[in-house]
Length: 258
Image 1 (cartoon, rainbow, N blue to C red):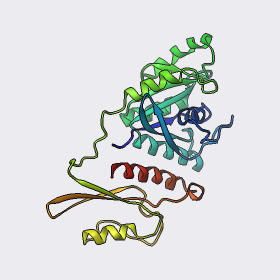
Image 2 (spheres, rainbow, N blue to C red; image 1 turned 45 degrees about the horizontal axis):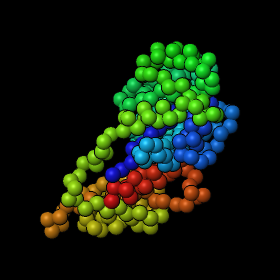
Image 3 (cartoon, helix red, strand yellow; image 1 turned 30 degrees about the vertical axis):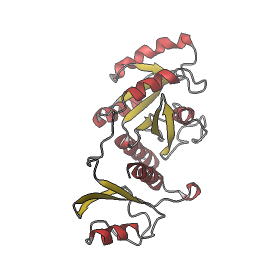
C-alpha cells in the first residue's frame, strides 16, 4: 500500500524545516534564521505510532509577484495537491499575518485535512497566544516548539488520525502492477509503447520528459496488467531541478504500488 503524504506549509521563517528535520529524524533541511532558505520541496520518510509516511518540506508561501516568490508558491501548491494531510505552520510570537490568511485561503480550496501548528510556543506562559489562531477557522491550534521539540507528539497524533485507512489506486487486487524504473533517457517510455503496441506514452530523447508516474492498463490472455512508467531517477547528488526532486518521490511511490 502506498504511504500517506504529509506536507508542511506556511509563510517563510516560521520553522517548517526544523519540524521537518525532527519528524524525519535527521538534518535533511537546511535551517537558518532567515526567510526563504528552503526554496524547493524536500521530501523524506517519517514514522509515528507504527504509521509510515512521506513528509514534504516546502518553501515559504509569500505574497508578491517576484519570480522567486511565484516559484516558491507554485512548489507549495504542488505539495498541497499531492498531500493526504497538511500541516499549516504559523509563528506564535508574531500572531496572524496577511500572508497567513493567504495560505489559509489556499488550504480551504484544497479541501484536504489541515492540522494547525503554532510554532515557537516555548513555555506554558505563551499558550494563551494560541486562542488568536482559532479565528483562522481551520480547527484547534497545536502549540509546539521546533527548537525544543515540545508538543510534537500531540501534533503528530492529530496528523496520523487523518490518514486514510487505505490509499486506493483504483485497480483490482488481481491486477498485476509493474513499474519501469531507471535513469533518465534509457528508453523506459519506448519500452511501454513496445509492450502495448501503440503510442500511449510520450517518447522523447530529452531526459525527464516523464515528470509523473503514468499508469497504463492493458489485458493479455485474460490477465489485467498495469504498467507504471516513471520519471528517471538519479543519485541524490545529481538531482538539481526542483521538479525532478519531486518526480523521484513519485517514482518511489510507484515502486511501492508494484
